[in-house]
Image (cartoon, chains in turn orange, green):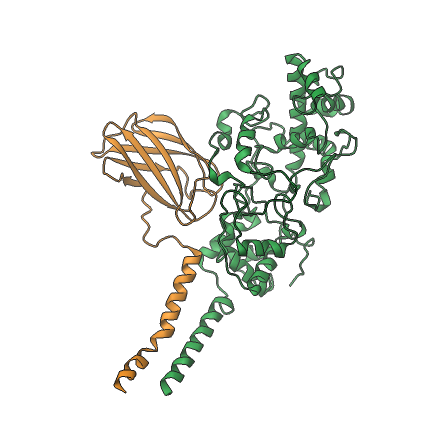
Length: 148
Length: 411
């Protein structure tokens, strides 16, 4: 009897577990972005070579409107990075698709700042933007999170 | 025995309570859901911005001329086809048939017009980048109007000269030009086009483009109107009582639309379209040539002499960001098509780019089943909806009809 008593006592956990599993399932379906998402628009690149800042110039970032952004890049020790070769892309991690456009860096504005044209987001939700930087110190990239 | 019975009762109670919470007893929307529902309301549609490529887009005189041209069957090869032949005004400017019929039959479904002034891309595949550039395509299509640009320029010079000149200034001398000449179309028409001087071709192209701009000025006045869904969304956002605005089944359909079904992935914003291009595994239409969708159209819009960057556009390059930074290639574009607005969708069967799906119920089933695409990769995933859920989603879609014209009933 003692052997069968213990599992029976714990069976009350079953409904709790069902609710838990069901909740996780529904949450996955609706795909909210991770709760601990770092939404900072200034980030060090992956290997620490540079620091990039995205400047959308408008808040909140609109859905469905093509936009021109500014990107600022410094070296690791905070000096503006001039004449760097930048590229930018992005997408929605939970949907497996990229940006609806192909943004391009169209102008170097001086002081380590660059104009990026063709930014567009075609649905609300969690987007990532990856900034690729190539300069004398090497090639590195940083990925930013946005929730629209 | 006591414990198992208690446990069974507990499980049952929990499941019932959980089901009720999700399906019946959850009158409130989460903040995220409320935000999403608010973003779909027609009240969030901004005032129509100017089209920089069309300087007369908001000129009422141009719209009056465009309206007359829209209904004029003389703009055709057989005198019988007007824009309005397929874009029927009292049917949401579409024709209710799988494939449009003009002088012949096209390979695509006629699209509605309301709200397309907001779209950076026109046609199912976005092969044109403005309403006025779009309007020019069917005029010279041999299976649609079957007209050509000298025929149209001459017709306008003879019948609409005063109206034209009131909007665009002096009409060039075109009445002595060949009756039928165009760089597209029949060999004879192409040969006639080649015989024109550069100035004559330029003059004809200019009149032709202006005809498109006048038609676009008229089309810009065709706007979507509020629906029962909008009344519900606006009441919800304002914190007013929403009871009676939608039925419980319609509310359940809305919950599926913004939740489990993830329909807002593509059908988002107040026009219920993201204006982009998606492969949703729509079956190929029987008897038609292979249709690759957007992947072909990107080259076509870049090559179009009437695009935003072209000589006949009134826009500067800075106004043409959509075209300049267009996603031009890649597997994602194969058999990708623009999601049409879902506003008024219940009155617009059949569905999809070649009318492949006959009823709204079957459209909902298509998204539930998520079949493999005949080319490229479908973005859909099976939704495992129950019959009740399928019916609820369809019921919600029927609330997107203009008040007073919908197929549904007031609750």
